[in-house]
Length: 495
Image (tube, rainbow, N blue to C red; front, side, top):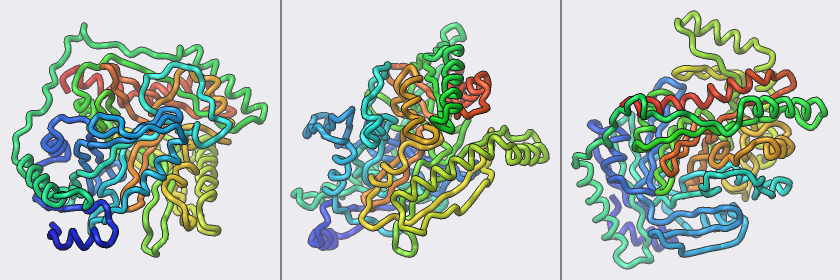
């Protein structure tokens, strides 16, 4: 931990957020147990985990401790809330506001730790696109579950767990403009260290009698969904677009602890982006396989932008031989290949809008990534960010994902607005962080449930192309929603 003298020296350099960092051995804890110990059930907190390549946990996990301040936006109404009180209110483009808000923080960044060590963490819902594309500015008058379009926690206290080294880093930021800030941060770290030794009970999960288990309800009747698929095919035949991703929303009464849903989902569907956000009046629980966009400093000193499209799915084989056979069949499928090529082109186009000329490249094409139950075709597209651009510029250029909208994006989203019967909310947007260091890493909000007022909402979509079969597209949405629904059923059964 830095000394008071070192703290003052960093303040003299102009930093207005200075981290104090303490280490501890974490070989007897899991990220979940540490989340329970350090947050003590308080809202405005989160847990981020990762499984790499579908088969092993990522090196780092992150526990965001209860945040005092958050930024939320619905439409053009933006609020900054501190300790439950609205301290700022603005009518503006929320992305412009967030870009300006980030400039308020001149943080000293801890050395030797992963790229997220504090900043803004949360979600950008699908309707963020209303503030990016003028043609989509008007929101359809369809039902909403009432969550904000954007919600970001200002993360100034967190724990970084190094799963490889079994080390835990407790990080508390202090504002040197506040009298006694250093001493309060030292005391707060001591308090957190004491909490590590606490015994915290796991929220109980009691199996529900079968008669009391809640059915799944749908907001898009199968016949209506299939009619929407046929309408998309008409638009495609007329030359309006090449693909449209049409989704449906499922809901289910859910009265158990939202954390229990995360526990079930992480066991059923381990993925590169696993997240649990306790946001007070709603929870966001997800296990997304797909990055939307990542921005990070490169070894050469620039900023690398990465988009990793995923399209094309087959089940895992029951034997190694069957697994290889499924892989070969997937890679040989002309429809899957054509759709994936289109998404590579979309990624190249999105990155090309903000990358230096000549730096956009496909670094991996038509790879296979295996997960617990399925395998996907994946590719990797990278570019070097133009000078003077920020994470919000990167988000604007890539939002929403082509895999959740279609191609061309804007016309596809106009068709989505016309045909989907409910608003998407968090689904199809982005979940992740914008760090104090300037890095950004956000996943596409899929395989994600939102719990609000003891109701679980799950949405899933299917990419409609010229030769789509409406029945099969319906089945695809049902299959994609299945992981979260199955996790909820596991909780009802007592795990």
